[in-house]
Image (cartoon, rainbow, N blue to C red; front, side):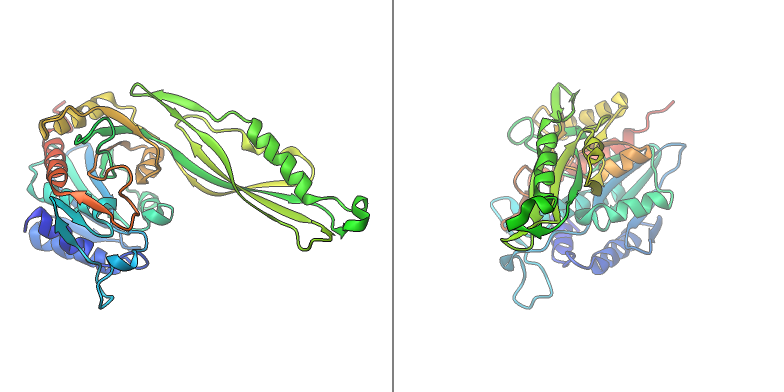
Length: 361
């Protein structure tokens, strides 16, 4: 089976609200194509292991996708459409990230690893990394991991780079509580919207942290994205809620908890995807060397603005880098696509790293 055929088969399986069929496909393929230990856990994560050694390298992906556009679903409704044209595959999940999963499958099958090599594909990445978190809770913390999210065309055109850090995302809510009153007697109440806007001013005055990585400045941000409050035009509002999108960086967080020290203000964290930074320079260099050997361009160490499952693994103790075929602007789009040549490039990169890492001690 070619990489294009495998990608086609995997992409055609709907997996935006139920990953079961995709999980079954991965497990079946691994059992058929390899003679290694293969498992599927209770949430649908799929694992395979080969080789041996004191240190483990994992090739990591996810097989869930966001909901497809109408044009990305076959007329019968039971498959996603996949089209090949101009050297690219088009369809939901081609870039994010079933193409990379297919490349990792073939690299895993074909590699003669230097140590223990693991293939891992998670469920639920698009909804907060639930599969990765479950796997970590069950003890899956490899020493090293290549996560196949997008790193192509970051430093230049037609180059697949190696990302050594990415931002995280913390989504939180400020809830202001007041006392309702008739607007004609506004002083009889406590206006929750006023309290909320005071809190917004304090958020805007905070400085988001930044960190220098790989010659770049990875800058955090704080953005108020939603506000909701009030019940009628003539009622002093008793409640107002404000949503904050915060992009976090390795090592430091904005002190949002200070916002809650005012009367009537409550701060709650709704989602917290951790950032990632690889601290093992030798590993990052080894992956860069493999990426260089797999293409004619000169890849670089770069950073990513998006949170991935690498953040969960990194927080648990895994040294992670990101190397994958998806390009900026491809994921989650109605015409999502991936370059076939870049898929082959990533497959070769994964195989090369697996056969060279960890180095002999």
